[in-house]
Length: 495
Image 1 (tube, rainbow, N blue to C red):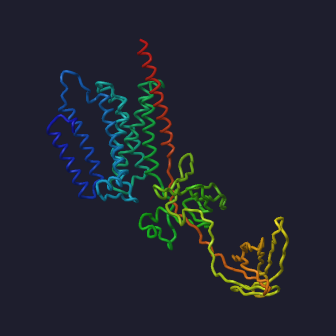
Image 2 (image 1 turned 30 degrees about the vertical axis):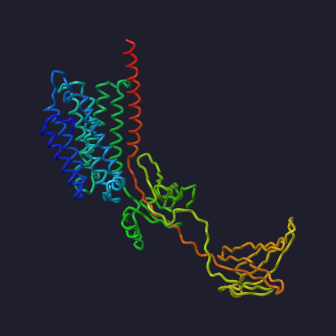
Image 3 (image 1 turned 180 degrees about the vertical axis):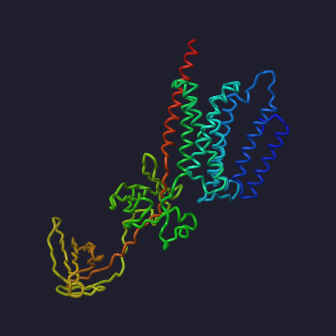
C-alpha cells in the first residue's frame, strides 16, 4: 500500500484486504477469492501508477517501457512463490496462530493448480511480449507489428488443439483456464522465437534473453501438457478389496492398485508383478517387474523400484521411481504397504515336547516321528558332536527327514535347531536322558507367511521432455546473457 499515491486507491486496497481476511476466516471458498483478490490488487496498482503517479519534471518509466513490465513480472513471480510458501506452511501457521485449516490431500486443483495457473497466465503473457518493448518508451507500430503475429499464431494453434479433443479438465473453471493458459504459454514460445529470428537476427551473443525466455516458455508448456494430459493407469479392479475404505478415504480406487507379492496384474498396457523387497539403511525398496505382450507372449520389459523411507522427523516418506521414454514418462510411487520394513523373524505354532527312544516312535500332529540312527564324533576342541536322525512318516509313507545336531562340551549341552522346509517343521533336542535311554525334543510348525502387498500409483506423463528441454534451453540462454553482459562491462570500462 505504501507504493500507492492516491487516497481512493489506498482505501480500495484496504477494503479488498479486509474482504479477503473475512473470507479466509469465515468460509471455505478461499482459493478462488485469494487469487482474484491478488489480481485486483495488482490491477489497482497499475491503475494508480498510470493515473496518479507524480511524474513531475523528471521523466518516469512509461507504461509501455520494458522496465515497467519487468517489475510487474517480478511481482507476479513473487506472488507465485508466496502462495506456495503459505499453503505448504499451513501446518506451521495452524500451530502458531491456533487455526485449523486443512488442505484436501486428494484434491490439489483448487489448492495449488488453480492459483498458480492464474498467476502463470500473466507471467507467460508478459514474457511473450516484454522483449519487443524498449526501455523508457516503446513506439506502438513496431511493437504491434510483431506481437499481433504472436497473438494470432497462438490463437490458431490453441483452436486447433481444442478441435483435436485436447483434455481440458472436468472442472468448469478448468475448462476456461486450460485453453487460456495454453494460449499464454504458446505466446511465450512463439514470441521469443520471433524475437530471436527477426529482432536479433539469430545472433547468439545478443539472444541470451530470448533463448532463456523460450526455455521458460517450454517449461510452462511442458508442465501444462504433461500434467493436463497425464493418465493414471493404476486403477483398482478388485471388488473384494476397497482401497478407499481401507485408507480412510485418503486413497482413491480409481488411482491406486493393490499388488500382492508374486501375483500378475494388468495395469494399463503393462502386466506388473510385485516381486520382492529389500532394505538399505532406512530405505525399503519394492521391486516391481513390468511385462508387455509381444507376439501374444508376456516379455519382461523393465523393473522399477520405488521405495519408502522411514524418517524419524517426517515419518514414512514415499520416493518414486520413473521409466523414461522419448515421448512420455511412467511415474510410480508406493502409496501404502503392508510392511515398510524387511523382517526375517519367523513365527511358530503347535509346540509339542516328544519323548523318543532308540528304534521307537512318537506322534506329532498328523505325523509319526521315527527314530532312525545316531552319529557322534570328537571335535578338535574335544567336544562330543552328536546328530540324531529321525524319519517323518504320514501313515506308512516316508515324507521327510530331520537331522538334529547337538554338542556336549565340558558337561554342558548345546542343542541346534533343525528345519524341514518342505513340511514347515522345526525341531530341537532339549535333553538327553541317559538313565532312561531316551531323547526329549521340541517340535513345532512354522506359521505360513502372509503374502506381502503394496498399493501403487502409476501415472503416464506425455511430452514431459518439453519441460526438461526447456530447463536446458533456459540455462543456456541465461549463461549467454551473463557472458554477453560481462563482455559489455569490460568494453565499457576499457573505453
